[in-house]
Image 1 (spheres, one colour):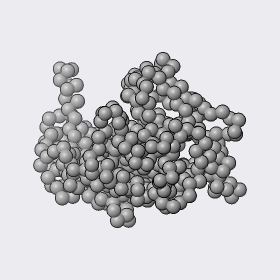
Image 2 (tube, one colour):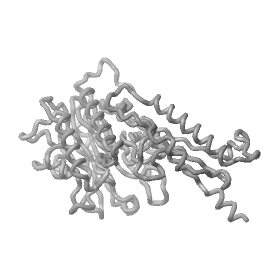
Image 3 (cartoon, helix red, strand yellow):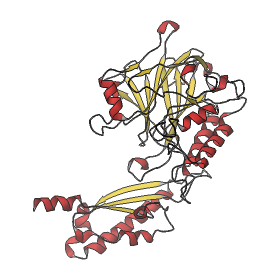
Image 4 (cartoon, rainbow, N blue to C red):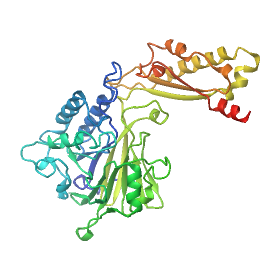
Length: 416
């Protein structure tokens, strides 16, 4: 949807920086990758300032640990103070919902605090990594909220029922109803929906038309019965859902024809596992809303460490490698070395012009074999690439992770 109509005034468009799963502090003790999460987070904040957004909306898992280290907490607070405080006037008015900001000293949005000088408000729910289940029932977001750095909403202290009321915002002719559902264990949330104990309340329309925006942090992919939040469980009066928790980046809004709303899955801003989904280009987005219309402008992050994932099934290369002629192990090993070398070259193409981007890439090559003859010493092979890829805390992932699956062998054994 395009809002580039010259007849639409900028004073009527709400512009929001969208980001989820920042995982600040992930791998912070790693001498090579320890700064990756903070570098990407700072780029997002820089873009928010550059794009002159009205506010930032975070979808949970701001921190990687429920009790973040002093280092992670300090760097987060420092970056938020640096980029979100200032003299810029706030154009978005809070009409109702101030009572929903958890941990706020004045029980109001932070930019209404006369002792603070906020230029870009930050709204955030919590995720499963920064939930308040530990640390005396406090979330790390409670600390940021009390310090006036973020507006923490969508937290539920009574998990026998969930009643979600929106925060009502207004800018010019655009009225926004913002709903938050911080992470609740999927099985518990499923039971609450089945018992009809989840109520999402829409505002009255007597003041005009509302754009209904919801941010959640749950499993979106079907990971088994009662282990995810089905989209059809959410009300059809919603216009757009920002879905946190899933790290694969699918930020372009996808239309759900059953419920007549859109879903945007921004994904994580830092790679926390060497999985295929993490290898997708990382993005943040600028969400622009005008009355009942919206558009999402994806922005690729330039500071993300290059990551290349590839999976190879040896059975599919049997003829090409001439495995029937013998010397199988060495042929598979040579193939793996060539593939890994090509992947490193591919990673070089992902290097951007951003001075803060880490250049040493993450590489994962997964080898699936069906016969023990195809096995080789993957640790020794990995040592060849010692200074060409990142180090990882897990030894088998130190340089080049070659995952050898024996599922086929098990299957043959069972048949015999």
